[in-house]
Image (cartoon, rainbow, N blue to C red; front, side, top):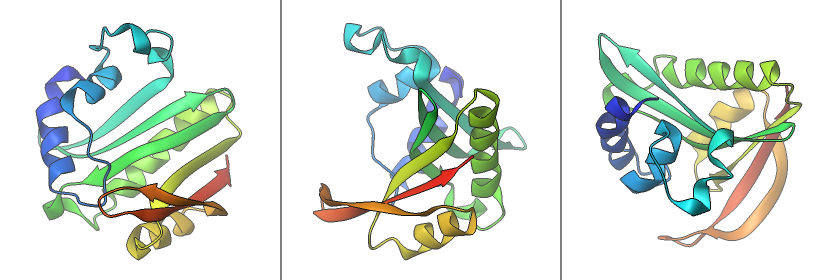
Length: 150
């Protein structure tokens, strides 16, 4: 992901109610644009990938590398490009990067009611690893923690 992708990423995010809704300033961490001191020690662990079709960004995945783990923080695909393998391709890229960096485990949180996302991740080898009660806001909801080995 580069700064040039930011507008498209924000548009896809806004149209994806299941995705985390981050302001542009938070996304700039992934583009290397955030200069705020509180992010200086973290910047190297944040990574984002975008999927491009015919010059247009149609999906994104954001993650945080921490030691031997990758946490998937946000994933969404443009509504017209869903169910075409883009999310799987983005996930494969992130897993390959984690494997290359010596990572041993990937985890994420998903709304407990997001059955489609849960099925998607389970189809990619993720298993339930915990529950975070009242994790999400608007609406208040628990998060299912999913994890898999790399």
